[in-house]
Every structure is written in structure tokens, then in C-alpha cells.
Image (cartoon, rainbow, N blue to C red; front, top):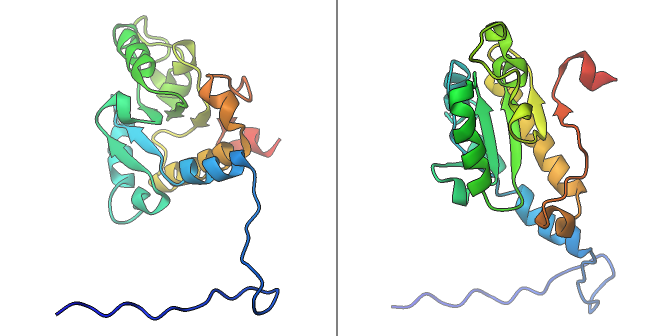
Length: 189
């Protein structure tokens, strides 16, 4: 037995009966609407911030509801979340992962260690911020930042995606040379 076809329901619109339903938009808004709802991030955690990154994917904060899904391949990822301390030995790997990502690509520096070296900054082997290796779009301060703060960073990234020109981003051009700081006094200014 086959299911009956659903009844034909005419679309209603504010213009009244018989008025066609039309949506006007730009190509950038149309493409960015799809892109901001499907952010695939690369799992890359080197320190304690990685635990908070894993917690953010759990049921309490659930990044999936924002369309953010983790991927284990850089070729399928839009976002590189650098969570934790980066040493000079690991810097080449971070640069390689970033180079393997397809355009448009974004980088989120999560935690004080990824932002500026954190409490390990005086060490000879620690990179003083991941922005010395790859261009960073969003900075998330904290040691370690809470899962709710990472949720806020993903929402800010969606706002950034919605406001940029798609053609420029596909060519690798960034809208702003400096990253956005999430929370804190710097974001208020």
C-alpha cells in the first residue's frame, strides 16, 4: 500500500490570494546563509583547552545545534580551532594543517596559551601566540575557556561569515587583518 500524496496547500503571503511568493536577496547573503549553518571544525587540541573543546560537543552545550560538526580531516574542515599550547616543534604541523584546508577557512585561537603562550610563555619552546604561525580570525581568552564561551565564539564566527563577501573570501582575502576578541574589556572597546 502506498502512502497518499500530501494535499496541495497553496502558499499564503501577506500580499493576499494569488500573489506569488518571492524572496529577494543578494548572492552573498544566499551563499553565506548556507555557509554559516554548516561550520565543520578540525579537532586539534594540544593541552587542557582540548578537554573544554570536547565538553562543548557534549549534550550540555551541543555545538551540533549551530551546525558545527567536528571533522578529522583538514580537507573537509572550514574552521581550525587551536586549543592549547603550541610549541615550535608543533608549529610546522599547524601550518601544514592550515595549508591543507580549503578556502574559505577560519582560525579560532582558544585559550590563553594559543593566544599569547599563556603561563608557558617564558619557555624557550613555546610559540608566543598562534597568530605568529597562521592568521587568526577569532581570539577566545581564558584558561581554559568555558564551553559556553566557545559557543559564543561559534556564534560570532557565524556573524562574521554572514557579513563578508563570498567572492573575496574564496580568493583568500580577509576582510579584517586583525582577529576579533570574544569577551573581556577588549571586546567592549
